[in-house]
Length: 222
Image 1 (cartoon, rainbow, N blue to C red):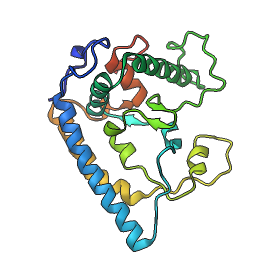
Image 2: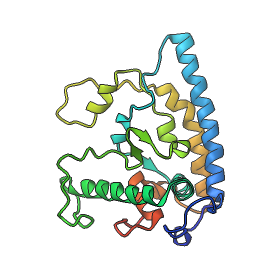
Image 3: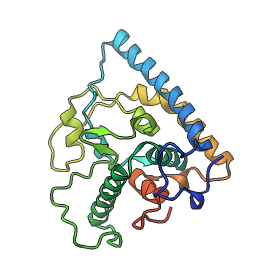
Image 4: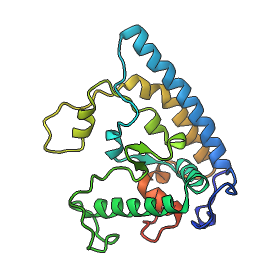
């Protein structure tokens, strides 16, 4: 079952008392399958083709990309946040998420309704708000797209991919790893559509879903 967003827990309720939601249980099952499939393909690439991923702990350049997330993944993230993060960590996450919205709305051609016009974004790196000191604070429940993204190129290519003035080569994405995760993405899509929702309409950028599901006042309508 996919929970109705209007019935989510209050952001003030967090800790061990937050129950395991049905969407969360389903997503975690999909994530386990994705992890097994990607690990198998990474091992095959290494053993048969000599191709090794350059991704590693502390490298979060791909977290500057626009990450599309569906409603099940979003609900899973928020349940984990309310269960595992402290009140102070949630407050800090809210600020980072608001900064992301302000940056997103400051781009050319974007509406400016979310920002109050006073934010200084000159040094803002527009990274995913779930990244803290180079590490994903919700790593166990990160979305499928994050689990399946591996490259064999130098990390600087991933950083440069978000810089329109960069002359670095594009990252070399291990497409066969993405393909290995594909069937499980379809399982999640089918689950959402069987619940009576349009899968495509359930997709939003991760920081947008995060604000919606946390009930923050700068959230946009899904």
